[in-house]
Image (cartoon, rainbow, N blue to C red; front, side, top):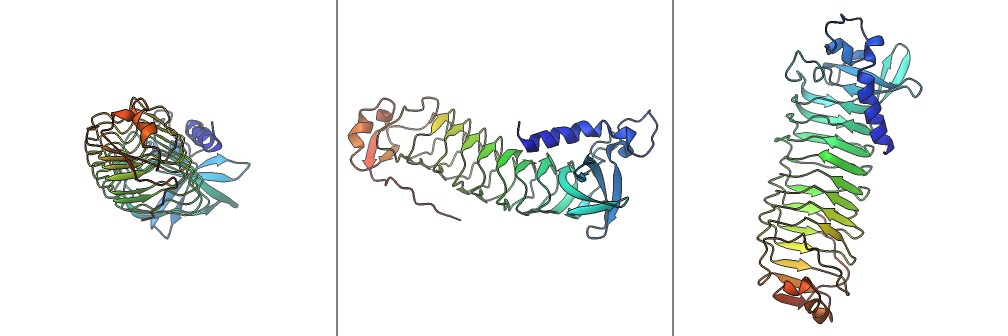
Length: 322
């Protein structure tokens, strides 16, 4: 388990330990607002009271928390408008470093600024009214921001390494994944407006980018080792460009009937991914291979299903940035 996941699990566990540290409250209401935070502070920039849970006394770190989400008395968060997450917050003579964000589901927040001190997110802002997120180069592990139908633009920070269970069913049209990102897991599915996708350095994609009905082409990054259960049900997907190396593909690119061309930049055919490319018309789909390799693919099991095998792709992909 990576460090960020450990920190987030610790934060969740801490929520149930808070009664001994937080404001006194009757034992009859274990999920009351007061039992979900350690201290609060009025913030002038966003004109709202913000609440914090201590994640480490030794390191003097806290996470910004929406206590209303953990309170069973309320169905949604009362937060709205702009939220500027502070880098530090003072309490009882200590300058606490804000390193995490928890909650804010169903809130009406439209804009959030996440500073460089924040390194982990615990499923924040799901089903919220978010329209814009600004990340500084800090957050290495991102979860949350799912089903934010008003979120139509997204710029990820260059510190992002893993995106997991995040940004599903949002309204972005373009996405450029940072070079630092190595894993995308259970994310970016049902993004029906997504048309332009740039993922130049990702190592693994799992259960992501499915049912993106406007996506027309995908260029698989150099260095990507595995794609599983991804890019399924992309009805308009026409072109797939694979890198000059073998990519392990499982249960991906299925139910994409519009696929008309697949570019493979490997001289020697690797084993055909039998669980992929279902529902495409092999008789009319073009398999583009490097020069001098047509006969190799024509005689390779699986690859020989393609009715058209053309020698018209280079060994080195040309990246396009949007």
